[in-house]
Picture: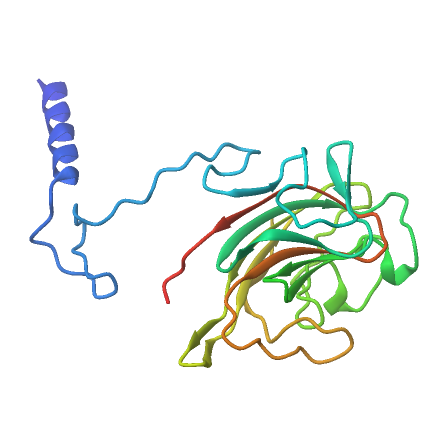
Amino acid sequence: METRLILAAAVLGVAAFGADKRDTPVQPWSGYRVHDAARPEPPRITAEPGSPPSDAVVLFDGKDLSQWRPGRWTIKDGVIEAGRGNLVSAREFGDCQIHLEWQAPDPPRGHPLNRGNSGVLLMGRFEIQIFDSYSTHIYPDGQAAAIYGQTPAMVNATRKPGDWQSFDIVFLAPCWKEGKLERPARVTVFHNGVLVHHNQEIYGTVAHERLPGPYPDGVTSGPLILTGHNNPVRFRNVWVRPLTFPR
């Protein structure tokens, strides 16, 4: 008898959760009622460990560079190796989530200020630094995972050269209203799974040994760029999820 009562209560509970709630208060921030069954449901995606989410734009999966503009970078052993110049995505992105994995050369190569040197340019203008900050010292706003020339990472989570490393980036593009910058770009970054920037403001476009440059008028999207500095940094598993954040 007790078991039947418990099962009946569970069924009633499931039914209640599925019911259209018309007697609950309206949420001021959404316009929907609490537990409102008429509220749009999130789209279903698949997200398997170690694989891009099903709604991601896969920029590199080990096969070819068809998602990038023509350049001088090459594929070796299923990974991208940096060449001369930059690697620029064919598609442009605004608000987005980015995942990529990178590897500094082992043994380290080149001048101490150019070891494992590359970067991720968001919208083609705001740089998250890639650098061998495990074995090589550089100024803090030029270390790995820094917003280059602006804000150092909260901690140095860099692995040794030859080890694969990951960036997971959530980027909020700048917002313009009536020709004026209403909200600057912001970024959250995980380096090797460790939070190194949280909703950090980006103060301007990337610049070397200068203050950040001004935001380009009205621009809210741009390509993803991997920078080349004549150092054979390698990349794999690059994907982007375009997002739309509330404005």
